[in-house]
Image 1: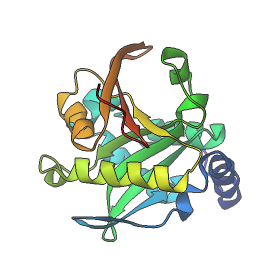
Image 2 (image 1 turned 60 degrees about the vertical axis):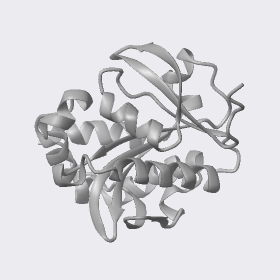
Image 3 (image 1 turned 45 degrees about the horizontal axis):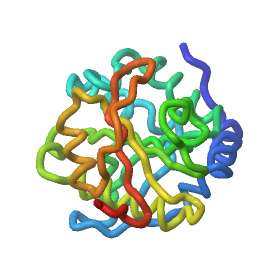
Amino acid sequence: MAPVETASDSRRTLHAASDLLDSVGRWGPAATPAGAFHLVPVQVERDLPLVCRWMNDPVVAAFWELAGPESRTARHLRRQLDDGRSIPCLGVLEGRPMSYWEIYRADLDPLACHYPARPHDTGVHLLIGGGADRGRGLGSRLLKAVAGLILDRRPACVRVVAEPDLRNIPSIATFLSAGFRFLAEVDLPTKRAALMVRDRVPSDPS
């Protein structure tokens, strides 16, 4: 059985991540066409069963590769919390947890070795938890809102980046619909990815 994380452990690791990401848990709500949306930092002891269930959805597992017992999901979450460069969050829409997000310092991540990173570049990973919430444009609306939150709450950040798997065409389409642009293909240790960028100031297409 995996060790149980104590409340003091949770506060300590959350504080470390907050220092690098300007207190994600205090960013407040974003207004979306679907309602008020919050990023709520994960507490492993509270949220593990839900996140694990999502990771075992075949659609999610095909790209996240975290299907399996709760202990596997717990290790993934704790690695982020211990490292401090990334903070896992539940996406809560109108009071309902319905998505999982990772907000991370891309400039401090191994990803920075694969593209010309800028200080405070902030990365995003996401999954929509339930099948009923997929395929109706909700992901792009929420992604646009989260990118807006990052750029608003992190004034030192000039762009939001993401690296979806090149095979995940729906995910890439979601990023494009949310105002991201395709920058390059990058070879990462576990995948060939599409590097997507949302600029604070839109770049000149010329």
